[in-house]
Image 1 (cartoon, rainbow, N blue to C red):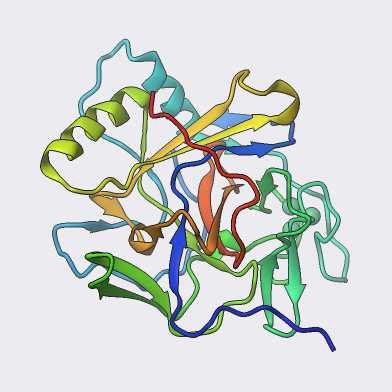
Image 2 (image 1 turned 180 degrees about the vertical axis):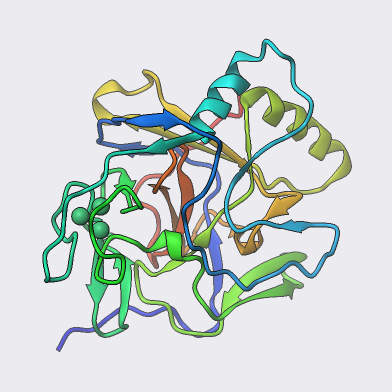
Length: 279
Ligand SMILES: [Zn+2]
Ligand SMILES: [Zn+2]
Ligand SMILES: [Zn+2]
């Protein structure tokens, strides 16, 4: 019989916040301009205890004052208001999208009765199926992050870490999806402004810099996504940073060129971790 690797009950979830992910992929964006309108049906019943924080179910573009000639912001806005059009044509009666053009990264774990990240095989960029696909959502094996965070997560205060943290009251299989790290999508300019501000007024920093690049073009045109859940965020903001993490971060694209940052349980040390400088 096959043994599945489960997280111990009430394990604190942690992730390494400072790293570069190196992917082999060729990004092909086929998108059209539109107002940003999510077609996702995210199910998320968590909320913040602190009423001064705004709970959001997925990333939002920051809205602070910007210069009219801020080309970096304009690019970000264009991406945010775009929809990926590269859907698949899977319409078989069998379970869909196991081997389709953007499937393959998830697998069905019958022991845990859930779809999980195939952590040993998943190297490529993750594209989930969306409304651009012909597959039946109820049979598709390529829709996970878009369904929202897993049940059983709980925010606790830790005296050891002197901060809040996230635990799971249920066992989590290896590769199990925890939640998105949702927050405000920032430009570099805005992120460096906020980092300075947070250094002065807060003793912690939640801003995540995620860099993706093609293995064959290291350091050439990496794609950077910057997420700040300090004021607007979801349950993902309570996952602690650790140099010995038990969760893994992956960029997941669904209907928007700007990826969602998905957190998956992965009870081994990252195979690759590197420091990312903020600027
Ligand atoms: Zn498909
Ligand atoms: Zn599809
Ligand atoms: Zn599908």
